[in-house]
Length: 399
Ligand SMILES: Cc1ncc(COP(=O)(O)O)c(C=O)c1O
Image 1 (tube, rainbow, N blue to C red):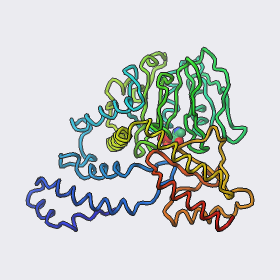
Image 2 (image 1 turned 30 degrees about the horizontal axis):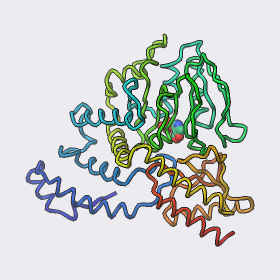
Image 3 (image 1 turned 180 degrees about the horizontal axis):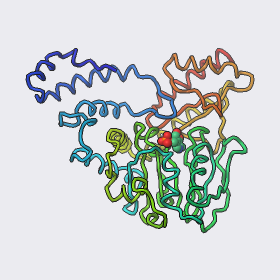
Image 4 (image 1 turned 120 degrees about the vertical axis):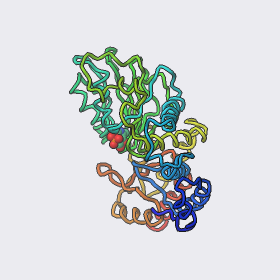
């Protein structure tokens, strides 16, 4: 998208032709801010599941940094990952992730590449010896993909699954064998809209895929041996994956691990063994700062509960729509719902109405059908209210 401040202020171009290093950054910023305000006012409500909505202030700062990072006069996209400026970004991002989650010095934070999907195999590769068993709970596509990778490295014991009811609930009440190396859970199931509202009581370290609800609420940190999350839902753009691992779990496997796939490689080099994904890490840092400014993960939880209540109350009271996940396991991040019996043929009409009114990305995942409203941290109450009004208006016309 063209921001157009060169056109608005052609004298800047002339100045720069005389001396490209002339410090015109403040002037640019003022112009940029007003252009940005106009663009942000045109922005639609983003209900996509991922890549997903980011806070407007994060987008503004990221856009500015793409032009000139701080006072460097260089874009963040073109500076060295070993520069002192980017080293400071990486350090702050690594410590802020732990601070927000309330984790201490016994954990290491890494920003890796390869998506959350690479963690499906890196986890057993780094934590599980041949002959040892890891326990998994199958709550949908993503946990199923994680389960499939374990057999390359050790034994997998699937303790419970909600496949019998198309993953509409979180299994509970299963026994966890005391010799399990770890218990793998997916805290929020992006596709099926279920979420753990409490975690099993166990001394076995929990390894948790938090890709779609990281930083959305406080967590009982001490239960987790490893937390991972692809950035592109609640944190930043695609391209980096946050991994937070308890140090004492590492160095216990006998196999030889390729250098790039060994967590210790990245711990020793503070996430800069090779060129890290500079921009996704920077944007993730901006989002984490934003979470902190909002009051941290407790404030996020309150905000998410209020938004969830607004939308779920409408789904439960509107005769045209039905929620698909069990009430007690409903996600505050991804809200799947379908047309009520007898109204199914109205689905595409409602989707079109939403899109025309600026509510984008509401089509449900193909195995669930209907609609899915992804309402991550950055979704505003105003966005939810707009959707709720469209649902009410549709019921008045069609009900
Ligand atoms: C819960 C969950 N885990 C893992 C993934 C896969 O992430 P990636 O695309 O970063 O590999 C996703 C993607 O949507 C997800 O929602």
